[in-house]
Image 1 (cartoon, rainbow, N blue to C red):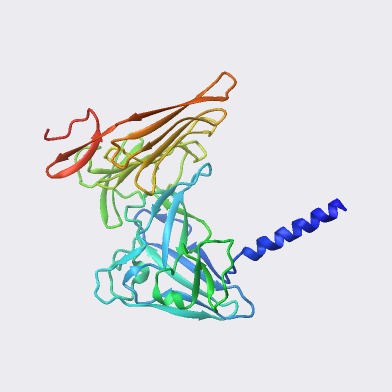
Image 2 (cartoon, rainbow, N blue to C red; image 1 turned 45 degrees about the vertical axis):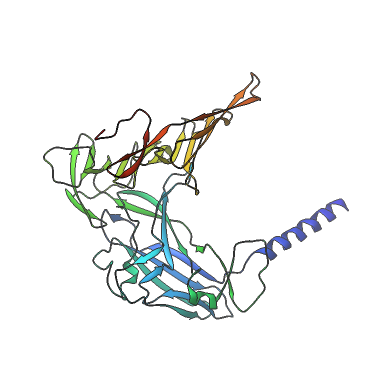
Length: 385
């Protein structure tokens, strides 16, 4: 009797759970036109849109002549590592095509099981700003996509586009029922495709052009330096945007080294395990606090540090003692880094939490140079002072 009641209870819970799932009859599947690409090569992604219903016709909002406003489709690229999920690049969600006519999107009605394919392009800068017909080419991560392996997905998000209001009922709460009003349910943050692999091989050319940026590739030892000027000697100053040890025709290797520095944006440094997982990842700026995203792991792939800039512009970091995954120190810093609250966790011999010690630090100082405010570490002298 008890077993029977238990089974009935599980079935009721399952029915409730499935009842809360929103029906999305229109599916989006992402693919690439080729298995791999070279740095700077035009990359074509195909978005296959399918009406999965066998009985009903359903609408979908599609790009048409739109030249301004938010994109219907935008890409995100994640690191290839399997021990963590790091968002490496995300394209601007808004169009900026340098034209005056705003254009429009369109509604397409898909018959039962009907499919359509929408191509979009990255690195297609010949058509990036073209009028109307080249909407598909207005996709960019904003920075060069250097050789490597990435995981990519695409978000379809009609929220905020007026025409979409006529066919979609938007929601944020997945557990709350939406009254049927003859509209399709759509998350307000969009519908996300599956993740696919993107392989970008390093070219053997000594001059490459990526996202309208020309680079002169110089080799020294086992590393390749991407310089913005054709210099007689290799430099690691601001004219060096990228350093890698990937050989030509390769997108991955053991002991891969990766460093990029995009002036006035951020720098990226990656140290990997032999299988490609992250040992250390740093995304940082030239200001203080400098970290935007940091993750560190020990030899057993146990996390020892995590740091990130929060949505409210404050900075957060945490360190762990391993083994045991015990928190060692936790820090919250103001957006300018002039005040940090640091909590240190102290454990007894049994490994139990004994107390917390809270202190405040002031790692950064805001100074003004040539009319511009800069946040630098205390004790670091600015040029011109």
